[in-house]
Length: 501
Ligand code: FAD
Image (cartoon, rainbow, N blue to C red; front, side, top):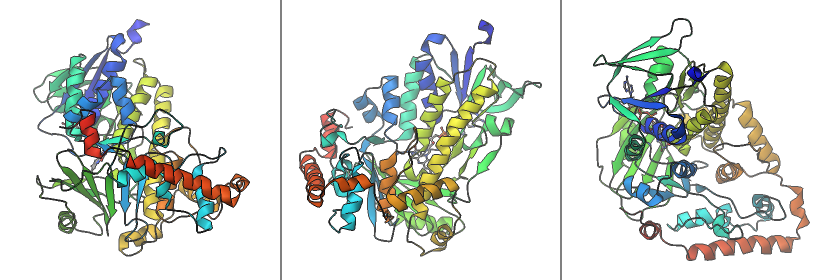
């Protein structure tokens, strides 16, 4: 029976996905005596972008036992309280999608329902004024969340903005210390068992070979094992998320280092701005049918904070996902599994989810179809939900000022998204998932932020008199204003916790 146990794992690829996987498996499988190797090719290199994350990364780092300040220094990280979206609902609009709640429930009803009623009466402040992380972000402040659930400062989470290349380097040191063996080389040949189609051996360009029981394909867009060898197939989602190119360029920082990422909608795509401690990351994600590469670069360069610090990095992609993220004895994690554009910083999150699901369903050598199916079901749900959430940004809009925006205004949406939008607009209902990247406050933030305001609200709101409604909601906004006035400036906070470089 013991012969059936996995004794060796080979990870192909040393980008963020490869080294996160190596670190996660080395830590969690420590007691099983499994040999873990990682092959990467310096000649091929990594994708070299990826700077904004979701709060879930803190749990990944915690599982590894990383020291927050040391990790932040090593990756030039800043705090991210959310994403500011400019020009998405209408030209000139702006709102922040925060990592946290709006207000706090009153009599077990989510706060935003009270806001909808107050808004209908013309008495509400901006929904943002009832969110601690938004007001803190707007004022350039941050702190760790309070552990006292009665305090308004407990109503948020946070993520990081960091150099993903440095993160991979940091995790490489961690994984190698835990016994992961790194091998430099380019895979030139892949051998498979004829009866099962399982991968048996990788041959590198120096003719050395690697054999393993389980392969993790972290080879980026190439999908060397999952696609080039196993021909798994790809679900192309370009009809929903048609942006297919990006240009990235870092620049000098100027002024305040914001504890949030910015995504500004343009005519044929959108631009990101991610402030790190030592520079600002920028990029333009666009749809090449409606803008040339030269024009996209010139739009990007005209919107930088300071002097460019490198040559532009041009990237090509197709949005979508692999038909099976686990096929035979290959699990693909990272860009080899699929890519949804980086509007909500979800790629590193999906890497983390892939690692977690693999550990929970860790197989023996047989890699049974039932294990594969369950893994693929879980990951498909993650991808589907994120696709809908990203698409929401493009369709909950009043913009029709360019061919790209006109395309979205005429689009037939996936049924799952239509249902979500209808449930919201009718009476402020957010369909809940058992888990996933985006909880109800995220959907509220984007829909309300892009001027999609429900006609109705939870009837239990009417249990409060108008006077109680006013005083209780005002008390929350006042508490937030007071709490933020006592919160530390972002960079002072980084110094305070020993995370400043
Ligand atoms: P890669 O970085 O491409 O690494 C692939 C590895 O495989 C490399 O080590 C390469 O050498 C190796 N390899 C490939 N072929 C072979 C071979 N034949 N032999 C040996 N080795 C091989 N994510 C976020 O979470 N937040 C963001 O803000 C964000 N922004 C992004 C913006 C853009 C425009 C793009 C395209 C992506 C962005 N991402 C973001 C995604 C993020 O960059 C990736 O998810 C992450 O870096 C993981 O990439 P990877 O490790 O899968 O692939």
